[in-house]
Length: 372
Length: 265
Image (tube, rainbow over all chains, first blue to last red; front, side):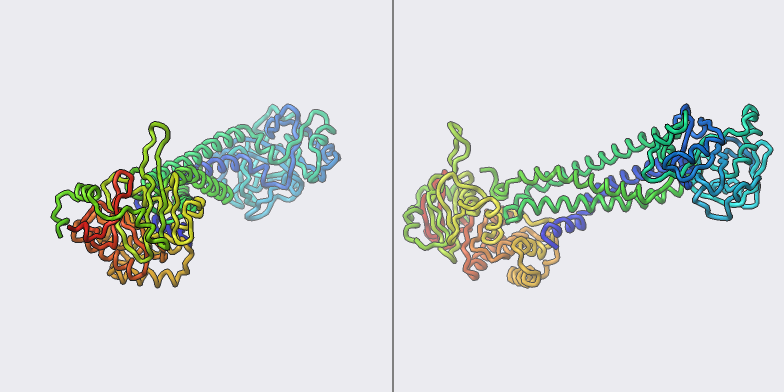
């Protein structure tokens, strides 16, 4: 261990009081940011699961839908047209219905997805049982969130008198924060007609077309080949869901602002610490300590404090996460944690860098005598 | 000792400087052409124009290897400026300082840092130990600055602490040590890297007379035993009896070189 490391770690070990203060502040910030991050992820993943966790990588919409599955109106015949478009490997119909239903324990809010099972748009997150067979009527796979309401394999979920027996459980498949059930287009349409009588005269209408497109496919060209349609990637379809992008940008702004505060906290703490140690630093410089080593010591301390803040903040946030009610959409993701950890360490580093000039300016000659 | 009965050592030092009978340091330096430390015509001026203050004027002195000398003068006399220049902490306005074959004034900032770590030991007024390192770690710290191996630095630190009577206190933090013990640790730290020159700044300022004497006696013994060259800045006439020669300084001018016994009377 070099002299810089010796100074840095000995001070943290033996001056625990003051470092407890900065580590606590950083832990609190990391905790706050992680909770915000889990809410942001919870909202994003809860809103977009139905378009992320499927085999499709692009969706076709009617032009007036602005990328919304609910608003889009296409015809079943469009599936063929999309399938024939350049770069499209497969296409399948998607019907969506946001509605109320009845489960084993009473009424439920849910989203019903009608698809050609096995084709594009089929959920990829089956955790139990099976998906309906292609063309199978009156059965469905249910999102695992519905298990909280007693929906299990073998139970039935009814919408407007049309019921479907649950044969499998899928996960991470909710849409606009509503849990989903996945069934055939025919069953979906029967349910739709039951609760939306005004649509009964449209036996061939669907909402969207799910597609598997080649990696280099030109989505604009695909849309251009079918009149009055637009095509978005699955990711863009998620972001086009009303509120998703706005929520994400609002929460991310709060998160990054809070991380900037972390840099400020570290900067202030070390500015004070350096001010307090002027005399000692002057003596150490007089003894032949290069300024760079004193700088490295401060940066090591900032990084150690930040790392401790990340560890403690994460533990507290995960503990706190257990107390958050199940109906509040939160999701603790490793990706988000890593990003926040890296940003916190960078904030600590940047904060400490502000002290370097102050350290450089300390004159070793002040170690001897007083002024003059 | 008459000096210890003097109520105001500062006044006493000032009077001695004015009434000194020894030769001027410049004359004395000519008699020591091969001295380890040669200070020649060193001037330090702070500020410029009509606000310029001359802190040190054409100071010349020579100190032999193995000598322990005192730089005696009242506060504001320029003794701090002179010792800072000798130690490579302050650049002179003009003049030269050589230690052995090194011209201190010609070194770059980076070289000066290295020079101080390797060749100069400092003992500061208030010890100035690293508060969060133990006595032993304070010694090991400076060894780390010159890249001494771990086993060498440990052996040397333990030996020095033993000589300074601090073996039992090696694992104590500075706040757990008395003022005298802290100053002894500072002496050990100054000697740790086996420097040519040991510069001591008012080592007894924070100590009572008896402790101060002990510390200065110890300093003398360590410097003499190791054949180092020691310079102690002081305004306290009672401490000069442990030195070989006394350079008196007043208003930025080195005035006389005296033997401690001459000052005693």
